[in-house]
Length: 330
Image 1 (cartoon, rainbow, N blue to C red):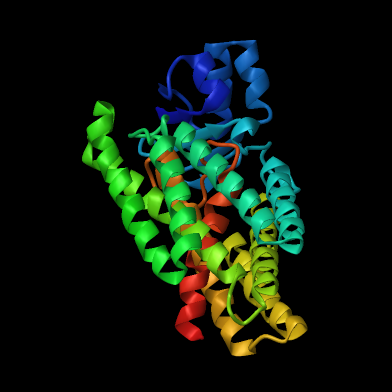
Image 2 (cartoon, helix red, strand yellow; image 1 turned 90 degrees about the vertical axis):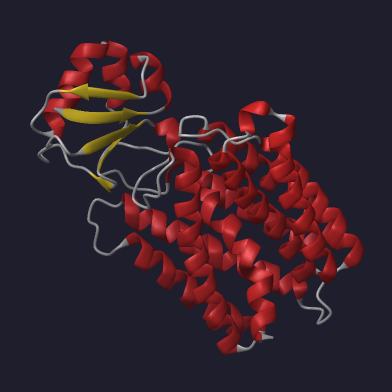
């Protein structure tokens, strides 16, 4: 018997998020699912991605009673097994990067407008996807955290970062008093962590952009470039049939190397940006793990959690830690 976890449209067709079905291999499980839930389910299965215990599975892989399969259709970032390309997630990430780079050239107000909008959409996507996990986040306290951090940092500068974070955490914890369904300690903890991430990301990008050294625009452009390259290369490695290297190793290596290239071209301190590259690489991986925990209730780096903006899980945390890391080495 195989334990199967269904997402998005497959879950809606089956009427359940978890099912138990017979099958000695993944191929047998797929056939049994199609037989049980009908032609529409079978059609959507053809373009879905199947994961076995957090690792991408192949049709011939055996399935034991202790194994868990996750079937994720394209709306959740899935694709057929062995597909290549960056997918919808990569295209969304690339589009956001282009918007940020363009807004960065136009000036701080434009950059903040774009990033605040992106952060708000990411928070809403996180809250929507979390409804399929063991808890459900609310996007309103996260939006409040974004607004509070923006105002506090813009008004007070660096001290405003701390003020904004403190108020954001209080708002996230206080939300449980407003909405009765949010009083579970797991939901409160998750809301506090999500509020901390979005709060720091807004404050960090604002302070880095208006830095006294006058090279804030170049710093932001460099951060966007190295984060984008690393995330996209990691996605390409992950989706490649060949699997020549670990996608996280490839993505991290791309971030560090592109950070050194940015430092050389822009005239930044090489050792500083090498350190920033290492921190960014770690943040991208950690961000994906945190995003997986929010969206599915479990930390599984190899799984594809549900949501339209899952590709932003890593970059959002990378932006959040950028300024603290920069201050640490400056």
